[in-house]
Length: 501
Image 1 (cartoon, rainbow, N blue to C red):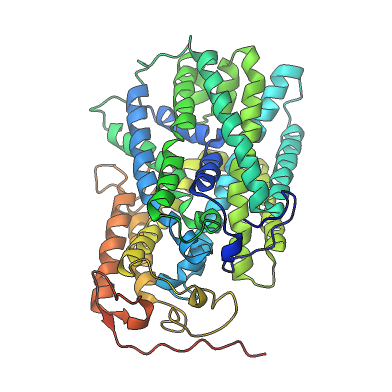
Image 2: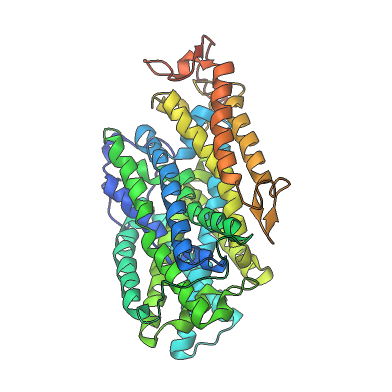
């Protein structure tokens, strides 16, 4: 972070952050990543195991499985920011090519819009619902529209100011949201029954599809940070021990067991006391939560919605604007943030009032993660084979509209990494099985169980290593110690050429 004031607008885009301005710590990465997930939107995702018909204990097992697996996949993606001083999409140039890095930009854009929308929808619904119960605010589309609009603009303002202001918001959000979730223990202690049996039992045909589906929904939350985790870790000095950086990213997601547990426990209460709100045909977790909450907890619910939504919204939108400014250099970071933020707000209103996208959260999240996870595997294996060595100047070729350099490969594309991603993501999509929402052509091959994620991860890892072995990359892309696990070729590398005036 720069040494400017809290309200000084950040001017850095995706160029390498100067060493003098990189004074963030791993605990700052923890705070931002945890703050971005310690939110009401995560509670909504935490309710899905109950919505899928699982018991409380089976839902908890699926939650822990998804959370730990997702945190393990995510943690290595925190290393690129400190190493290269830029975001992960730019760092992916080393493995997908100078032009191929747009894959990461596209994935981060979709992920950010999805989770920004979820945060605005869930927070806006909770605010309007709470105000309706407390002061009789009319429960109309106009009320929801005003809530969404004001909330989205507040998030946009924070993102325009940049990383320092966002970090300040997350400092407040982590403490406040955690306290309010703890208050929920007292609010629901009398109603909570851990023996809630659920509608789907072990041995039922739908049990394993429901269990795996619930775990994938939970896993989507930590994995969703992969494409833009470097947006925040780029402010950490390169000399910081890598184990501490990875630990911060891993623990930031493990700590979200708090909002996930809150969503799971309260959903089981809703299923018992107000079952109409967990009807699979039209689930309404926010409405159910307000229906079963004691009167004194309405205000804390609204505060959780406001504070948590701000945190999720800012962490999502900040990274999108940052990366968009690198794909279209005519935009500054601020201009790109405003542009993407405005598009996202339009999307939110269309999705809420002209369509019924809120019922497809699980579909959208699963499909995005199905495509993102193989990209993350390629990044991790690329890091291993390169021994963590990168050329920061060559990574910036695309942003400067130059040509050539270590990562130019074939006209700016590294077909090895791109092929591994395209094949693995495409195959994984074919194995997706979300009954009633999206079932791929091969979705029923595993007795109805969604195995898209393990297929995508395994194929991406295996195919990428095979391609690197059969078609070695130039010796120049590796550091002084040479490659690890694979071999290199004496292929000449084009020098970096400045753009034609």
